[in-house]
Image (cartoon, rainbow, N blue to C red):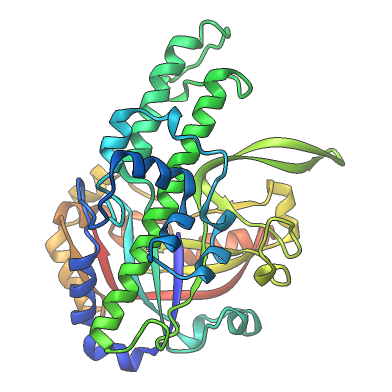
Length: 382
């Protein structure tokens, strides 16, 4: 998840909303098999997935400041491209700067004053009433999927060696400190770095799109990254267990990191306020920006990463017509461009839990603190 602010207001953007969404739909490829504009050789791609966002900045796809505002500065440094297959490389090499499908999106959002929960924190993030912000949700595309597929097959073969029995093949695994376990850990880091790179290049394209439509530079439009935070990732971290510090593998699947103020892994930008937490809702109902808390120590500094579904994709396709949903959203003032009508139907608001209830839950649990709710006005979907 990635959130970007601007100095534009809803009043300034509304007349150009259709042009803006159409422009972003054109320059940020979306959907299954979408190919990006960044061209690299196989050898260069290996460097990309080892260096992460640093590669983007060195190649003109972003600002130095973006790195400070990205989890782990946009790079997991134990990534090792020798641990990924040629098939994974062939699936990822043309997908840098692409949105993909499913619940991935690029969304233009409006800050309603009534949705600002903590005015002081919002101000520190550069957020103000009637502001336009942009949110992106996407990952490592087919590259990460292939790495997972490759290692499921590897683990299938070695579980007998380690006397591991499972109930579901999707849970195939190997002990962390074995060669196979470490190979996967390093390969997965490559996928995470590809995801950072992908979102960074998309950010670069968003800046270009806004510049084209509003005839002002991204610097003039103050298009600053708030944060980029990963989900669906495993990392070795230090946490307290029964009062003692221990090194643990924290696997945040369907969840996201929520570090508190003064956490050593945060850049000084966030030492005082805590790590920004971005929680996606649905394209009809909106999303939230929160911050991590000390109480999140109870959950290994972890919170939810989105609303969560109330119905399967298949059920949503049966109950919702994409074309009708498109019309209904337009009537609500949300302009959408989608590669697929069936894909759009899968992401209808009714298919998701109420984002306000979800955020209230994590707030009551004390594991993250809401700052502002963000309402969609434009959306690019795969």
